[in-house]
Image (cartoon, rainbow, N blue to C red; front, side, top):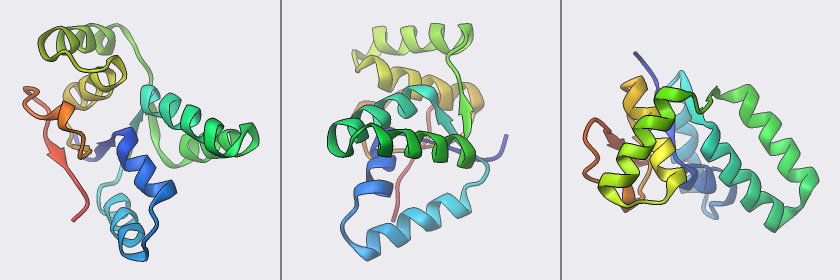
Length: 129
């Protein structure tokens, strides 16, 4: 399968990066990695963060935009079971285990700089460079 998945930390860079250079790297990564997949766990995390920082209206707009720009991957039985196995083995936050299991099941890299993802078998990591 072609494409990439994205962790919440990438979305934070996408929406809250201060520098023009970082924003350009984020845009380039999105354009070069299509199709782009997003776990609904990451959507939930960015919605919560946006809700806290900017309010419900912006959170709704952002969620709708992400739903249009990314292929959303819901938590089904396979994602849920793989996430539980990842969480059990690595002791990482549950949302991260859902995001990691999504990338592993789809056999695509995950854009993240989160150290929680390191060492998870079957998950290839990428970051903006």
